[in-house]
Each structure stands twice: as C-alpha cells, then as structure tokens.
Image (cartoon, rainbow, N blue to C red; front, top):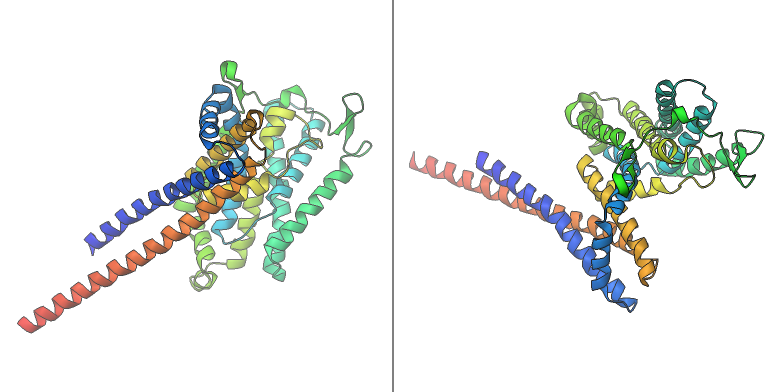
Length: 375
C-alpha cells in the first residue's frame, strides 16, 4: 500500500503540472485563431506583449495591479472553499473604501494611528456588508448569489446618495469633481521606490501577509479544517459536530473583511480620496482569478500577475493596430481553458486512481488466495 500511495502522490503532482500547461497551450492556440480571424498576424502580437510586459515600468504596473487583484481573489476564494459564491466582493470593497475614506478625511490624528484605523474601518465595513448575506443564508435560506448581487446594487446606491456636496462629499478641482474629503498627508502610505520605473504600492506587503494568513488558517488550523469540511459536505460536517450555520456566516464575514482591503491600495497609495472614478469591477475580476488560481494562495498570486500582465500588454496592442476587444477575448479564453483543463485532468486522475486501487486490491486478493491454496 505504501508503494501505491507513493505512486498516487507522484501522479497527482504530474497531473497538477499538466493541468495549467494544458490550459496555457489551449489558450495560446485559441487566442492565435482569434487574432488570425481579425486579419492580423499573431506572431508580432505575442512578441510585442512579451517585450512590452518585461519592461521595468510595466513590471511595476503589473505588481500594483496584482496587489489589488490578489486581495480580491483571496476574498472570493474564502467563499469558494466553503462552497459559497460571494459575488458581492465588488460592492463590499467599494463601500468599505468609501467609509474608510470618509473616516480618514475626518481624522486629525498622527498617521501611525490613522492608517490602522482606516484599515480596521474598511475591514469592518466589508465584513458587515458580507455578513448580511451570510445571516440571510443561514436564517432564511436565501442564496448568497442572489443576496450579494442585490447588495452590490444597494452599495452603489448608498455611495451615490452619500457622495454629494452637503452630505459626505465635497467639490474638488474647481467644482468639476465630487469626492470625499482628501486624506491628510500624514495618512498617505509611502510607496516603495523602484527607480525610474516608478513606485510599488506598499500595501503589497499587506497582500503577502493576507496570503500567508489564508494559507495558515485553512491548512494548519482546526477552524480551516472545519471550513473545508463544511465546503465538501455539510452533512458529514454536522455529523462530526461542526456548527454548519455558524461556519457559513463566519466564512462570509471573513470573506467580506478581506474584500474590504481591496480598495485600500488605491485609497492609501494612489488617489487618497474616494470619487466617481474609483475603480469598479475588481470583485468580478477576483472571481476569475480565484478560479484560475484554484483557490490556492500561490495559484491566486500567479493568476493575479497574469491578469495584470494581460491588461498591461493587450492595452498596448491597441496602439499597434490590434482591436481593443482582444483583452476581453484573451481573458475569457484563459478562464474557460483553465476550467476545462482542470476538469479534464481531474476526471482523468480520478479514473487512473480507481484503476490503480482496483489493480492493487485484485493483486492482494490473488496473493491471499494463492497462500490459502498452498496452506
């Protein structure tokens, strides 16, 4: 049985490598066909993407984008590990960033105190907003998909109502822009200087810490074990004494708390205020990144970097005469190929494992029968 286990572990490793390779090859083939269909040569397009994406200023851009995307991906992945589909990350992080900006603009305390308070406010707002969906699910059986979609719309309406002069907004730039009160300079987070290439958002450190915490809690604690158990089988979890409803609500709250961090790189490192130009849609990008990364902290990081690379390089392709819609096509193709590739490899691996176990058991049965005959 030890040899069988070692063989199965080796096969799992090979299949784990085969899945992303298969997805990348399939995505390149499909993308090539799409570019050819537009009447362009895909060779120069791929070459330009690699050259432009490897430039130092592009690398800084990719890291900054990946920081935000990684936080969104982890937030979504926490729900996925519980078999919950948190579509509300977009509303959660935007509402969290809004109230964090309001608090930060109103604080008149040193930066070393203001910045932690802003972060806590953002996490608390995201947790409360996601917690509403969690409570509705465990008390009334409302699908988190429906409730989080509606909460996204409500969050947008709340921000639109409060972000007005005379409420929590004020006119900026000669009366052409409505925003929250700008953060005082003491609340600005310093960026990491990368020389002529620009500067890296310092909250990349926070993103790394979130990833480490996500890996440790889910893989090394009893809480993480219970969370994964509920995600795989609520019946089995309940039979083992796990409070399923409590775990569902808790995981939604944690997912929302992480979602609250998504807007902070923009708020604390870049814009220093919340206005109508604040980026939207990052929550939905987080869903794609969590799927690409298979809910693993390292996989999500690689997916976030890939997404940032694609945004940087395909936007540049527009200036080279390629259609601007290529970005959306490539992103969709990659997600689709990854999902299909992992499912194909999973089914193949399951079939191979069943065959090996069956063959091993048959060999043991034959050996036992032979011993009995000899005896």
